[in-house]
Length: 296
Image (cartoon, rainbow, N blue to C red; front, side, top):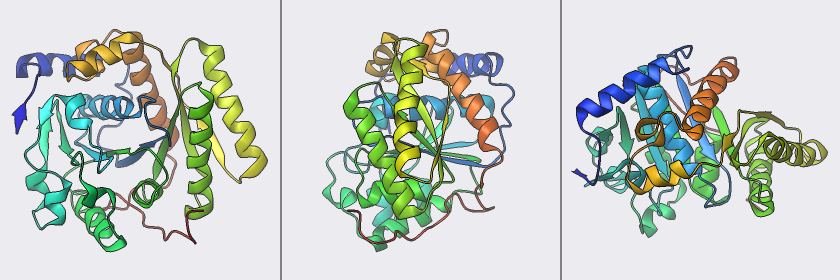
């Protein structure tokens, strides 16, 4: 594994200690959690949210596994500043999953592979083998965060539906809201999910965050048997893109930025709200549910 651009180990340790001191100390680090971060639309900052949530949990002391679920269009390695030599494709080809992991910023990443047609178009048997491999790490890690790729294909729906906790990221743009609703509708109708968390991202003020939640809730309440629980919104913050360009999580490189503070607050709130949910079974992350019907 080659490091593209990263902090020194001393810098990382210092910033991880700061996370413990900056408002997320109420999280129980060793409580099992498995979180899918989704949203339907690309370009809404979902991957940055997934990375920084995972780093926040790791900074608290949770043994954290981050999975790049955008299997054929991988980008988490860029956000973390690493160039992996192995990926989920190697796991499907027989490599022990532990050998494909990359340790960075206090967590472990299972990378996907950008441009991999095979990963992006896995059949049901290959998808089950990959989920089984990730499940095999549940005794090694307390926390799983999966960054789900854009769209509502089989890979995205299966990985999201199997995760006990689902976070739907949405920005105020009408297309992003429409795609977030499409994602929720598929989860509800094809995976019988009845609950998810909505995380407004890149909002300019609280009124804009409230509008994101209100518009999605109006659709959900009208057409679905589904509960959307809002999480603290993440404000528009240019420091997020600056950190991403450097290959560093913003909660580490700019811990006092508005987005970093909001992400830590969202992590704490999610942990409290999700504590009473259906949790990962001991020794497994995922709860497998058969998709009903096609995805139309």
